Amino acid sequence: MVQFDLFEGSVNQILTASTYLKFKKLLSGSDCERCTLSHARTNIVVDRGNSKSEIIFIGEAPGEKEDKQGKAFVGRAGKLLDEFLLEIGIQSDRDILILNVVKCRPPENRAPLAEEASACSPFLARQLVLVQPKVIVLLGATALKYLAKDKKEFEMHKEVGKFFMLPEYPGIQFFVIYHPAYLLYDPRKKEVFRNHLARFKQYLTDRRLL
Ligand code: URA
Image 1 (cartoon, helix red, strand yellow):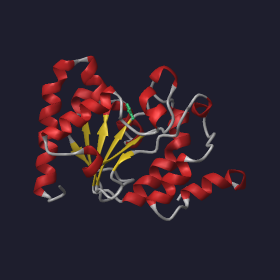
Image 2 (cartoon, rainbow, N blue to C red):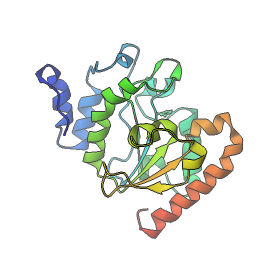
Image 3 (cartoon, rainbow, N blue to C red):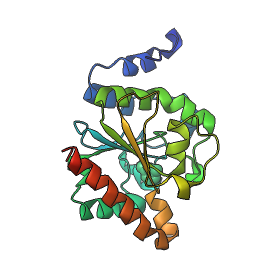
Image 4 (cartoon, rainbow, N blue to C red):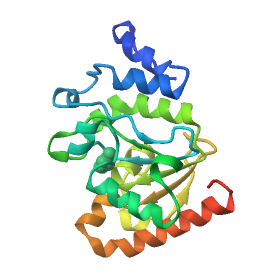
C-alpha cells in the first residue's frame, strides 16, 4: 500500500483504516490538503451508494451539488445516471458504489489535472482494496485515462461498450461507458448508452452479480 512520510500522519491513518466505513469517516472528516482543490471545497466527496456491493462505478470529480452535499453524483448527471440504471433494474444507492477519480470539486467543473488525480489516487486505490469489487464501470474519458494508465491516446467512441482487464487490478473486470454529463450535452448518445448498459446488465446476470 502507498504510504506517506511522517508529516502526512493523518493521511497514513486514513489509508490504513481497516474497514471501508472507518476509511470513509476519516477521509470525509479530514482536512486533506494534498492538492489545491482543497482551497475551494465545501466537502470531501468520498462516494455514494452501497460499500458492500461488488459493483463500482467511477466518475470524474464532484460538481457543485456534490460539493455541497458531500455525496457523489447527486446533480443532473447523477440523476440521469440513476434513471438509466433503474431501466436495467439497478438502484444506485442499493446495488452499486459510486466513486470519483478526485474527491474535491475542481473550479468551474473542469477536468482534474494530472497532479490532482495523482494526489488523490492513493484514496481511490484504498477504496478498491477495501471494497474488493468484481466489476468496475468507468464513466467517461477521465476515469479511463487515470485508471488505464497505459492508454496514452484514445477516442471515447471506440472505447465505450467494451470489457477489459488491467494488470494493476487482477481479477477485476472493467467496462467503459460515456459519462452521463456527456448525454446531457449530446442527447443523441442516449441510445448507444442504453445499449451499453444492456450489455453490462447481461454480464451481471450471467455471473449472478445482481
Ligand atoms: N460528475 C462526476 O464525474 N462525478 C460526480 O460526482 C458528479 C458529476
